[in-house]
Length: 159
Figure 1 (tube, rainbow, N blue to C red):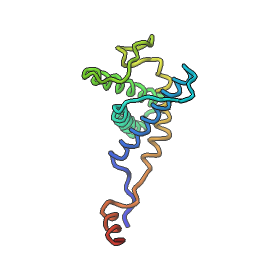
Figure 2 (cartoon, rainbow, N blue to C red):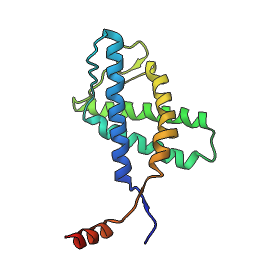
Figure 3 (cartoon, one colour):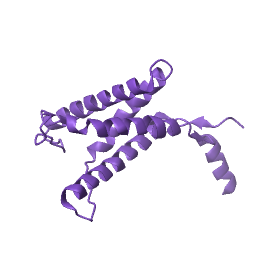
């Protein structure tokens, strides 16, 4: 029997996308609750967030793998936060060009073009720490116990 295979890029993209999506819903629900006291905890997001979070977190994963032995933890977390801002700005700009950007930070005092805001920097920084130390660390250790071909053979035997 061959050793278990690590997850492929599409599986990791899926995990990262869903994680980011759920975290955004939780974050927006919490902010809404703090601002309004609404116990319904309605979080909001956009389908675009799935792709943005998935791609951004794959980028952080690549940085983690190449820098973990050369950079300290805090400099990596700062770099990840900068990466998040770059991803948020560039994806927001592209979406804005086609009239589909779901967020607007122009009401925040420290925003740039309404696409990013420095007020969220502590949240992004903490999120990046959790991303590296929990999500990426565990996701890279997940393994598939059988290949697709082995699964198909087992299904045929069972039928």
